Length: 327
Image (cartoon, rainbow, N blue to C red; front, side, top):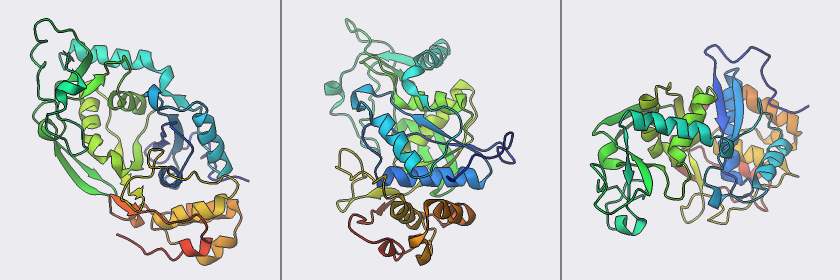
């Protein structure tokens, strides 16, 4: 028997809870991705809701052939069960284009001719991206042609209450700037794609890594402009290495071992502040899921943006259970 099982047909929680895990297929599943998958899945199942999987492969140059199948097979090996078919963003261009055309019709976007080199000296946003200086906001410079489309961000402050990170506040004009929706290479930007797909899939709650916390106000603005509902948000601490870098393909994160799911799942539970008991180290996979579903509490997740990774290669499961609780 594998866990967590889907809720009974017609049961999606008292308020129609629907969550999701949306990895980018840039490489194998690593511990940081496992933490995000586990937290989002457990919260959905704890609420009696649906849990969907979406492949965020809109950024094709970063995607690795076969990584999507590897991620899905690893999730299955770890006992994850999702609802419905996996949605691939590369199949959704028509939906993204329709959303962009709606924003164009409303005068909410503008064409931009600027190159990265031209923007290199502009100020930096909190996420490290360059703040757009408004060069093309009121029209393309003479002799220039459009390379991309940007959202004309109003001078407004977006606030929301994150279930893990607490109250959030961001002035979009000063901290994000006019951001890209259609890139110069013809690909749709992540911010537009994720908003369109969350609405299309009926996502009511987004549980994901805190590396996307600063992107959330941009997504809330797009939801408002497109007439979409805004999900509830919970941003889990990001797993970082000894240098403070997020675990990723770029930082050479070690893939999780699909042949040994129990130690990694227990490590992820401990990382998320769930305090699994020592005897769980000897349990079978289905028993780990049973314990996790019965004891999961989102409020026990550390209220931090990042937490160092447990060095779980070569360690015993017992070592994971001694991780300090961080709030």
